[in-house]
Each structure stands twice: as C-alpha cells, then as structure tokens.
Image (tube, rainbow, N blue to C red; front, side, top):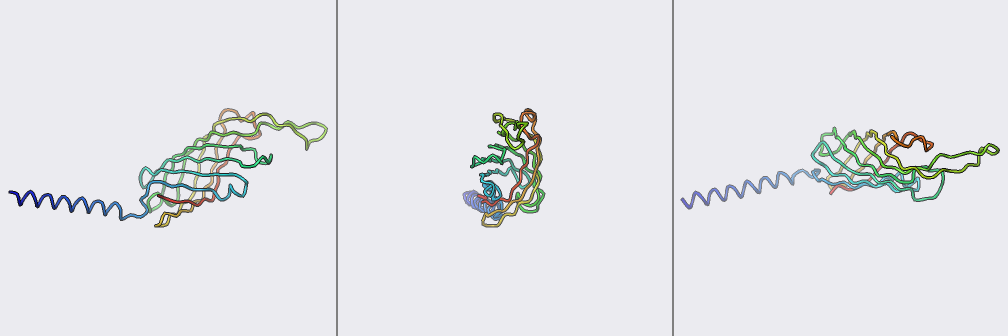
Length: 180
C-alpha cells in the first residue's frame, strides 16, 4: 500500500515538472511589452507604450504621447490612449495586428487670423477631447525579448472638434522595445 502511494507521488511530481517545462519552452510567451517610438523623437516628442498580453492572439495596452517643445508647429500637447489589439501572426502575440483605441487628448485651440496680415494669428486656449479610432501594424519579437513594431492609425475627435483646427487624430510609429 505504501509503495502505491509513493509511486503516485513520484508520478505526480514528474507530471508537474513536465507541465512547467512545456510552459517555459515557448520563449515568445512573455506577457508584457514596453516600447518607445523612434519617430516621435524626431518630432521632439516622447511616445511610450505598455502592452499586456491576454493570450496568444489578443492584448490590451496604453500609449502615452507628450510634446517636449514649445514650438507652435505641433498642435498636439499630450495624449493618453488605451487600446485593445488582436494579432494574426503565428508566433505568440506578434505578426500583423489590428486595434481599436480611445484617446484622451489635449490639442491647441483654433487659430484666429488677423485680416491685415494672414501670417499673424492668436491661438485660443487648449482643448481637451476624446477620440475613437482604429490602428493597424506589424510586430516582430526575438527570442531574447527585443521587439520592433510599425503601426499607423486614425481616429475622430468626438466632442470638441469645432474648437480646434482638427477633427481627426493620427497615430503612427516605428518603435523598439522589450518583452518581459
């Protein structure tokens, strides 16, 4: 009787060890990504994102965008954008993807031009608005966790578009990051 119990305990221990090895055998199956957008740096901005994988084909995440200069050529001040992403690749959470996003954004107000000199204008106060949109792109991940991502997307301002010079927002990027 004791030999049977001992045999069952040993078999259970080996099956648990085998299950752990099967989970750890996929080097792509890490659940967190952090990236920084290289294109934003050329525009004197900061764009970072965090993504949490729910399974091999879907994830949720958040983008943060901040303009680092006082140059008036960039109308966007900052944005925070949560998203849901669906992957179509063969590897774990990589390959082609489509996403839906919401975006809380601060945009410069409408420019009011003077009639005497059209190059002179005053700017109304900043406008906070919310946008909904879609995004698509591609992600590549190495076994060590290094990743590259390219994406582009558009969204529509929902509430205060008439108070700005824009009615759409755009997300695009060439990002590098790490999966952990």
